[in-house]
Image: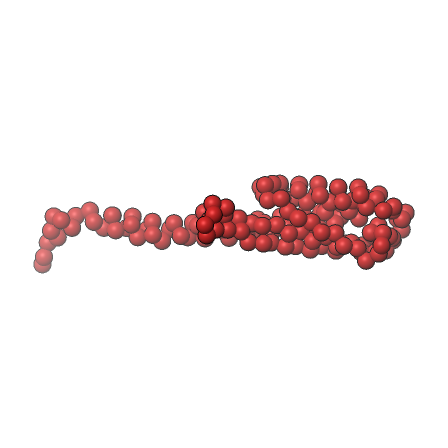
Length: 147
């Protein structure tokens, strides 16, 4: 039987650390990226739903737009994405959005930055778009709103 030489002592722990770091660091990065995209998707869906709800319960289109913006910003803040600055688009099936029995659709779009991935030739991070849509009906028995 051959005995281990003095030069091999302690190399297993170094190999374990090197291989462990080479495997664990990419896994941690993938987990961070997936969780960031997941949070943005959840925030977008909640923002669309709450923004549409805030709009259809308002008294006018102008106050509905303000309330939808506030609800959207609050939904993103709840998920820790307050700096994402989402875009909202409101569409209606009637000329006046708050026509009783009409439907209101709200689409939320935001750009989610990928952590630690810069764009080519720029220091800005690479982003992926996330979009969500919600459609709600205006209460049929409400008083018709003004534009």
